[in-house]
Structure formats: C-alpha cells, structure tokens
Amino acid sequence: MNLIPRIEFIKEKKLVGFNRQMSISNDTTFELWQNFMKRRNEIKNRSNPHFYSMQVYDEALDFKNFTPHTEFEKWAAAEVSDFDNIPATMKSYTLKGGKYAVFLYKGIASDFHKTAQQIYGVWLPNSEYEPDQREHFEILDENYDPNDPNSEEEIWIPVK
Image (cartoon, rainbow, N blue to C red):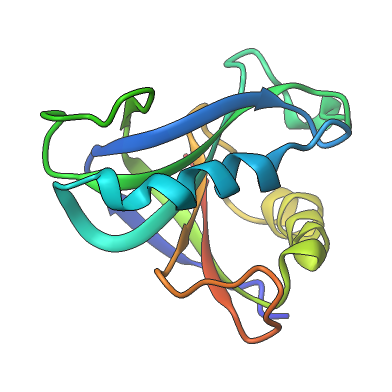
C-alpha cells in the first residue's frame, strides 16, 4: 500500500444528498447509500459525475480518543453548482475546503478500515501534518462498486 499522498488545496464545494448520525459500531452506511443511489438522478444540477462519502466529526474530537462508538455525521452526496431545486427530503451542505492529504485506495469497501488505520496510525503521526477540524471525505466515481476489488476511491484527509 502506498502511503504517500498528494497534498491539495480545494475551494468550498456545494453538496446535496442524505446524511445520518452513526458510529463504526452502529454503521448504517449501506442503507444511507442505498437510499441515495435510488434517488441520485433527481439531482439535476450536478457539477461532475462523482459521489462524495463524507464524515463530519465533532469539532472537539481528538482522534487519539476515537473509538468504534464515537458518533459522527455521514453523508452520501453529489457536488452541485448551486442549491436551487434540491430534491425533496435531501439536504444541502457546504464543504469548507482547504488543505488535504489525498490517498488512493483500491479494493473492496469492507477492507477500507485497514488503509484508514495505516493513514491515521502510521502516516499522520509520522508526517509534518496534523489533522484539521474539517470534513473527511472519499470521492467515488459513478461506476464505483463496493464489492469490486478493482474499485478505486480517493481518501481526502484535512490537514494543517
């Protein structure tokens, strides 16, 4: 596994989709994405064909204290050009932007936690960066299949 990220600065992004409170021990990601994918075509003003899997953590969270029971807000979303005509029951979110370490993950979704452990447990503590209190997210292409070992996603970790 290559733990050498590229560093990127991004501007804020407008996202539309669904969100839920969850934890790793009470993971409802599958249901969240299943609901979103059924209705994704209702979003008419998409900026690109990608999907965003985003985690919003409490600002007071120190990742050294993160446990399987730590709650966070999870999003399944698409980037849009504006917040006009948001489909019924979907929500809008403005991703703050800033400096990110971007890693490429290839494999099935159920093995993702191994890469996350390497990023947070090995790369981040040994890098010149600290985690920043902004959104963490993954960018998935429109053909992403969580069960395909050849599927790729970009992991975006906010750093300072």
